[in-house]
Length: 268
Length: 261
Image (tube, rainbow over all chains, first blue to last red; front, side, top):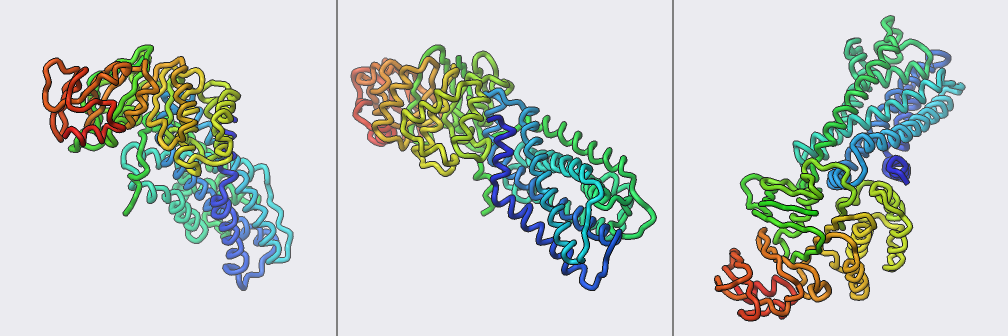
């Protein structure tokens, strides 16, 4: 078994990740469909845009759970990686390739679970058939978003492992989730500046998922009738630039990985 | 080939180094390092593996500095930490490491059967008993293709029958071996190996294990001593044929030091 298959199997058999990344996120879809929408009578494009906004934000939150899992596994594997880069044929690039594969696969699966949940739950609530506009685009964005979160989590945790010490690990591990809430919900409920929406990888992901789901141009505030919309090619460029940049820095940080004792991470 | 020159390892600035000024060369031979718990044996192995912070000195493995070496697949160890690359049962972990080490999987699985630890295959590393964890690490370490094998307490929590099998395997292993233990009685299993003592982060020796029956510890600095060991509990000498306590009389170095201190 190669390392990519091993990491994929490890993620796919991680019950905790399935619960927090999929089941718990479907709970948010239920909240969106039945609680937040109470009193709404939606249909047609309005329904698609409302469901699409929830879908996009919840995928973002779901993928941040994947990032936490990857970050945690790095803290447990620092000695193994420091050893493997010296005394096996594993290289930082091959390691990243393996985690990219696993993250992309799991990101895709999470994307599909949330997509299926959104279509089914919003469809049931509003008694309407909701058909995502561009499924191949959603597949591509889910894959890319999985890779972005992997690269982000890897960078954050390598900074902890190499320079800060494991005492910061449990806090830093939650940074992707906190930022996902901030940027995802920020775009859903407020009007953020367009430069921020293009420059933030979180909003790149949310916006691309929204556009793939609804088929409509992305307004500055999701689900609104704002006349200012975002250009998807720039969103793709933003996400790709962040992902490639983070992958490069992750490779550099991986070369310097230090073996840390897990006891360092003990808080009390 | 392992070359260690004046190696010191300090985990935190301002703290006492875990090992101090250790020098050692291992070339086509096998060495047992005997030391009390906390004497620095594991740190020595971790330093060779690049897992401990080297504060001064050098460690070269097959001519390459451990701080910069990459892809030297001929070094292996039984430290469980290094096998926590992915959270999967041992059955899935073995093929991963066989591939990363570029060795055949079949002989590894044969060894697992030979040592009758097949039930370990379906468990993750952290789910194994201490003895199983040690044995799995030992068997991964001695897989074919390793030129230098670093074993930290390889017999810990391993039952008598498997100890004998493992000792035979290590005797026949066509590789350089550095084995650390706190059990002096193990020396009888490895009579043609070299022996070194580790006290409070310093290495003394090597001595031939064939002469373990002739080795004594004596209080203070003795004329003609093979080595003079300075510790926080006093100074004593390793002597041949005479002294205060024969090394063979003790089961562990802890007991020996307590007896002589």
